[in-house]
Amino acid sequence: MFRVSDTHKLSREAFERLKAEHDDLTTRGRIEIAKKIEAARELGDLSENGDYHAAKEEQGKMEGRIIHLAKLIENAEIVNVTSGGGDLSVQAGCVVSIRYEGDDDVEQYLIGSIEERREGLTIMSPGSPLGKALVGASKGDVVTYEAPNGPLNVTVVDIDF
Image (cartoon, rainbow, N blue to C red; front, side, top):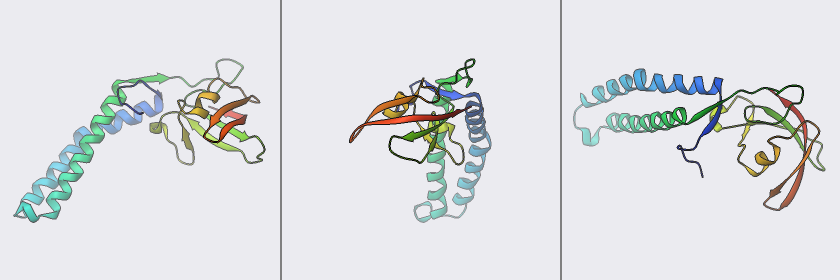
């Protein structure tokens, strides 16, 4: 289960992006939503004022995101995504290409937090069963993990940082 109090491994890039989003929401975002609420209040009866209720709902969602971001930033562990010398191994922040045994298709995943998301890549949590099996593996390694229908073998085709 996801708890915002857990330590989250984030790349420097993701950490900076989340920090910038938090700063933006706590300044510009709060000012904008306050203006929307004030404009809606001027329209009159709040009990039947759709603009007012929409602005208040937007405010609630934004405040939830601010709290979530604050906890992520507070509990972030910045990871340096490097090859660790000559041998590359799967770690948080890398893109891993894998092939399931008996399949010709190669799939790519970004190993890390959902907050690491990048366009065109599916995120795989390093805490997921396959993620746990892959972390520490090198190119060419075959790892086994327990899937709902039984064990599956996966070959690490490539690792990119």
